[in-house]
Image (cartoon, rainbow, N blue to C red; front, side):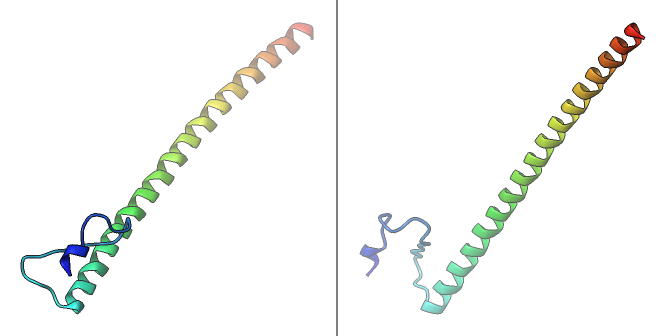
Length: 83
């Protein structure tokens, strides 16, 4: 019954109400393909998130290296003044 296939279904459940009815096998194949599409998009988003985080951490490392060099330079100057 198509009246039960409304928008009140669980999140993630794929619905397709074509003008031309699909066989159960066709509907299963369509759902499988939609699941593959969602998974592909999710994987791409996950990879993008990882790349963004790596970039963020690399920038943080560069900032800490710069700060370390500045502190070491100051330390060397202080030691030279004493020596």
